[in-house]
Image: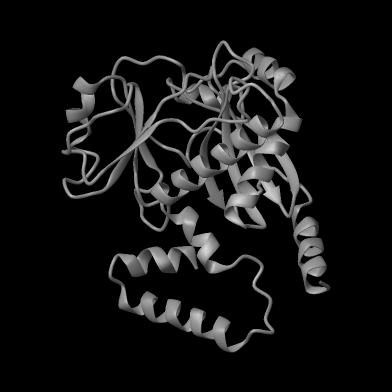
Length: 276
């Protein structure tokens, strides 16, 4: 449905008809269980609404911590500063470089996973060949994280956490990449991309220090905000700190590729919801 919706927004009348039939079916067949309401899913198909939801979840977590008398310096998680532009030609204010440039649309387009690392404001003009003049984009502050990304899958309250190779801390020119084709494991395969960190020692160090209780807390806050059963989020732990967790992306129903028994997990979730 997310792909159908995305194509509908691009003017595909056939996909628009499919989408309207789906909504009509849901309305006229209330006995059919909908695991996650479409209005909740739709939030994660646009990076602006995703960002706003993450900010709201982080604020709720901070408010809850303050009510318990906790220090504001020990925030459960942060969301990188982000600005939204109607096009890459727009003036840029209120963000610190380096940044990651992404399309605002998070799915259903060939370029939604193509991104660019921009080291400074003087390099923004180098993005012209990659992003259209009338294409909405976002600039997200790049958080140095030693090339280790934590992928967290949430399946009806159960968490599955894995590490993925990510981008190095520093770079001198624009780096373009497709987030779906980055290496999935540390080691020799990652060496084929020069801007991707291959250091397994750093991976082990980050894994040893990560606070899984905190990841559960982040998942709970996001779940309360999003109202979703199945989602995933990406976390980076800021370089030189063990207490600064940043949620850099959230997506609906990720692949769960690393979860060996996910088929059985999914069947159990469906059965549980059907018996409610």
